[in-house]
View 1 (cartoon, rainbow, N blue to C red):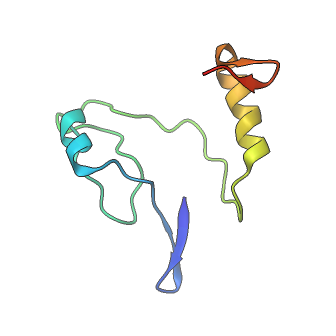
View 2 (tube, one colour):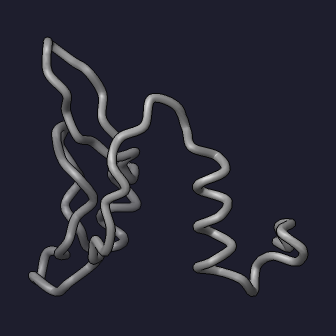
Length: 82
């Protein structure tokens, strides 16, 4: 996600709450940051595989198409089977 703040675009993420960060062993995030790649012991926690760019609005169809292609077992005839 990016937001326009103080005359500049800032990459940010919808952060975990502080309690969850501690449970997962990662440092809580500050503004202008992305999800943590490493936990406190410097083990890989998360890996970024693709950057799809910036969108003016939530790209619902793109997200749906990507979810179906990456997690086909969760969908039947294009419908969520949660």
